[in-house]
Length: 136
Image (cartoon, rainbow, N blue to C red; front, side, top):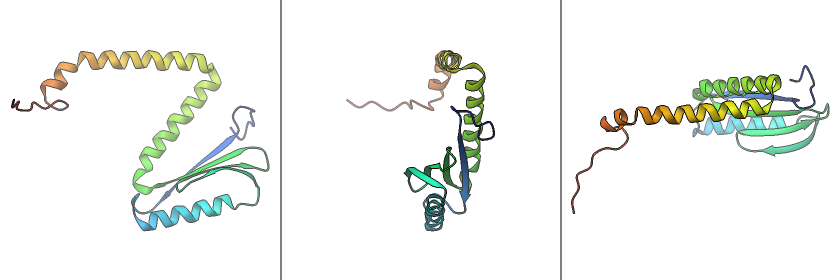
């Protein structure tokens, strides 16, 4: 999107992983250092928001940059979310928002119907609704 410099698509997203779990002091300290460095870059003209794991800025060149810091264990999840976002962006660029809304609605209805079809199988295995002894 940056390469094309389209008016509606003009941002860069970075996903950075840090060692340590989400709650470890090392991961939090690393994330804070990364965020502080990122928001202090010289070409930043506007800070949209800064948090412990995500920051968003406007650069002097006129595009936005977002950065997100995640634990190394969450790499697959973050990568999957990035791919899903990219695919969604490409579909919107090609077909527009209307067809995307129609497809999302269609797949929502189909998934709800599929759940209704397998409801008995799920309930009979006591995975969701365990049978509890009644005492009145």
